[in-house]
Structures are given as C-alpha cells and as structure tokens.
Length: 122
Image 1: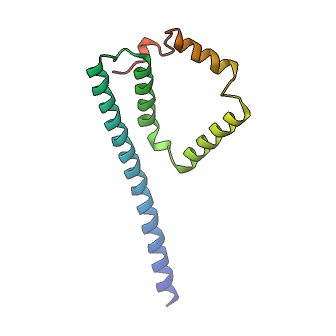
Image 2: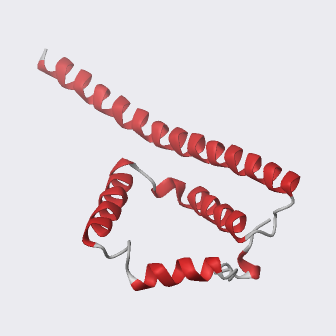
Image 3: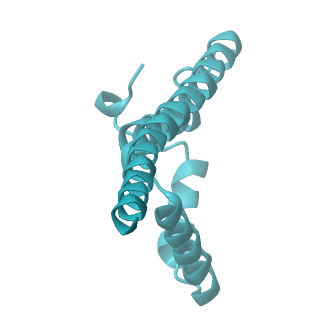
C-alpha cells in the first residue's frame, strides 16, 4: 500500500515537472510571437508614415529585438525585480532629475541620435 502511494506521488511530481518545462517553453514562444506582432505593426506604421529613419522608431525596434532575444530569461521574479529597482531609483532621484538624465533628454531635443547607424536592425 505504501509503495502504491509513493509511486503515485512520484508520478505526480514527474508530471508537474514535465508540465512546468513545457509551460516555460510555451510562455517564451507566446511572448516572442506577441512582440513580433507588435514590432510588425510598428514597422507598418513607420513605413506608412515615412519615419523608418526616426531615432525613436529605431530605439523601439532595438528594444523589442532585445526582448525577443532575452525572452527565455524573462520570468516573473525578473520583472518584479526590474520594476521594484526602477521604482527605487525614481524615489531616490538617481534617474529622474539627475544631470545625466537631463543631458540625455537635451541630446534628444538637439536631434542627436544615441543609436548608432550600424546597430539599427531593419
């Protein structure tokens, strides 16, 4: 009787492990597909509007490509850490109102593009 219960518990544990492994692969695939869809719609809008060379569009495209590349590493704890870290930096003033942040905004206002031309992925 105890061997039967142990076998059932072992099979439940194994099935949970296999389900988790498949879930991780599925969630990464779904995230990538969602980002590809948004990126494609953004490209269509940029092409229709004639702003494919715009630094804002290029930066957004690079950021979306980074999300696709890093999708396997993105998980709930990583998102929670990033959000909490960003909130902490905003509250301490390390990001908002700092001289570095102000200089970056001024550079965008002057028409300077921080994205090198060779880094743009079409």
